[in-house]
Length: 183
Image 1: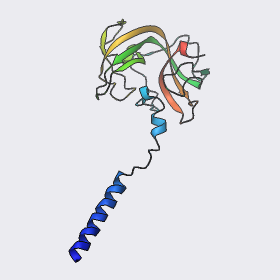
Image 2 (image 1 turned 135 degrees about the vertical axis):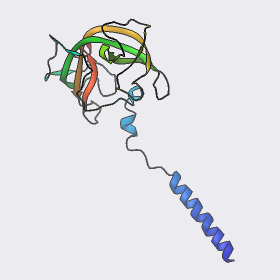
Image 3 (image 1 turned 90 degrees about the vertical axis):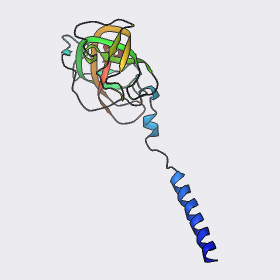
């Protein structure tokens, strides 16, 4: 009888432990992580470091320290947000398609990687279809990824701070927004 009761207690404990371990508390970060599925791994580091060789814009439409409204939606909560301009730089901005080095699906039409973030770019301007290696680390799996240039645009790019319009934590030193994406 003792063995029978002991067996029942062990079974009940095992079931209880299994039930507790499979009961997952809702992830408090799911909402913020799903704000932009295509940029879910976007890094929002507070680093204001810019790539070597990047030139400060001679005559930007928006000066460092000024305010502008973001007119693009690289990520949810970005469009319509008030941005503070951290820096303005003259370069070539590229839209790229790449496969992350960490695996996973191909990232289509990523905006923006700049000339100074492409391995061995020097002064060569790439054109659609060119294959390149990315040195930017904007998203997990981007650095070292092989990419294809989708389009190129000679422009002024901006590093900005902004508070998402859908709530959430302030984004510091977001890289990059082009001049045409600000008003």
